[in-house]
Amino acid sequence: MTRYFVLFLIIAIITSVQFLYALEEVRAVWVPAWELISPDMIKSTVDDIAGANFNLIFAEVRYRADALYKPNRTDRAYKNFEPRSTFLNTAPADFDPLLYLLDYAHSKGISVHVWVTTFVATRKEWKEGDLPFPTEWFTLNEQGKPNDEVGQCWLDPALPQVQDYLINVFSDITVNYPIDGFQLDYIRYPSDGYGHNPTADYLFTNETSLDPKKDKDAFRKWKADKIKEFLSKLETSLHKIRPDMPISTAVIGGTAGAYNEFGQRWGEWLSEGLVDFVVPMCYSKDIKEVSKRLSEYIGVANRQSVIVGIAILERDKGKYDTGEQVSDRIDMIRENGFYGYCLFSHETLLKDNRQGLDIVSKRCNNTIAKLPKLRIPTKERLPVVIVSIKGSKYYSVEYDTISTHRYALLKAKEIQYDTDCKVYIKNDGNWYNLYVGLFKDKSEAERLAGVLRR
Image 1 (cartoon, helix red, strand yellow):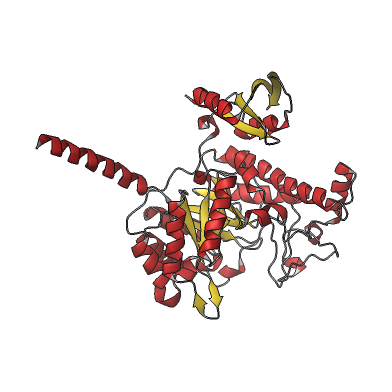
Image 2: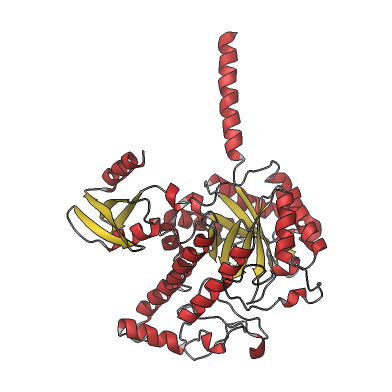
């Protein structure tokens, strides 16, 4: 009898641990700007999300270079001249959507990450006098036109003045609101043919001695590097204000397209510590295509750095993805071990008499889930990074805890020596030792890395 009781107790404990572990995942919803225009609308939205056991909101507080918050609300350290969003034209002048959302969502136990569009700058119809920046900052296609396929214009990521402008705007939001995280959307070029702002073309030629319209592969890589340069500066600024705040990016759903056409080399962003996690927009209606893309993400990054974005979209006129289809995708995301999922959007979850919200809630979110930790501060990061150089040599890199994860990794990638060596690196005016050891194979490097971690 005692033996069976002990066995039962062991099984119960194991089951309980597995149950508790299963209850920690990201369950996020994107909430677009036009759902944040009144207190009643915000309350209704948050109540829906909390009632369906979601735990995170990505709230769009910058749509097209506009503000659904108060620029320079109390702290004016970062200049921010962006105008109040026209979505708020009928709202009282003193209404602050972001502040109201934060207060109400936090009271319901929901975390809020601000969601901002980055380089897309205008709507389809715009007037130059309404813009808080000059049109000379727009990126152009090879024909010299700024408009994308739907008529929007975009800021050019390669321009230093564009980078400085956006860093000020995003830092202003961060310093003035108790947000739980920061998500960048449209952090890319409109498509592969853009990037030909005259200043950008000049900078490329000056740095490389190449022609941007002829040497397209080099120009493509250069553009991606400029986005990464911007992210590096922004990460430094935001984490100087809030070292604990996770930064994420919403990215194109197909890895090859993200890398080659849009300049979103997000695997590098993660490995170099520029962002804490990414949300690829895995919006295919074909479950086999979803499975294929999940495999791509596993090949690029740690599963705990990827929150998979899925959507309820209008595929045919008046016909949206069903709650069952969305639930199948969520099941697949969980089976593949990702940290969680994000649904686009709250608005479309309510289509067809709220069937999407109701089905996902009952089938996938029938228990409460704790939000996992989405940022590991630098001081807590593992002091070892394993780097493959040209696919055959593996290095274990140990660096000072004062040095950043990003800096050590970048330096390790530059090293091409064939023997053990010591390299000296400079960081914030001080010199630190960076030891790089060469190993015969990956397993040996991983073994030493494991020892150093302990």
